Image (cartoon, rainbow, N blue to C red; front, side, top):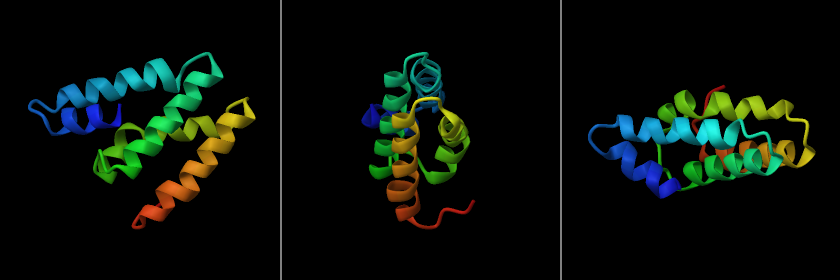
Length: 97
């Protein structure tokens, strides 16, 4: 999925990449099942690790939805989110909150 985000983000028109991201948010980030929300965090983690999106685009398109999961009712989702934020996002450096 992260490779698809990368390829579609660099494609013309770039709206295909945004459409894919919106689908990921709707189908996984807001999924009624915890496993879907957890998968969304995994996808975001991979997108960061593999530099599939510039960080400014990640901040616009994915970060707000990722941060809403900080209040998720399932501890596994919150733990993975914390791990992703700490070990992946902050390790990238240059991130300003």
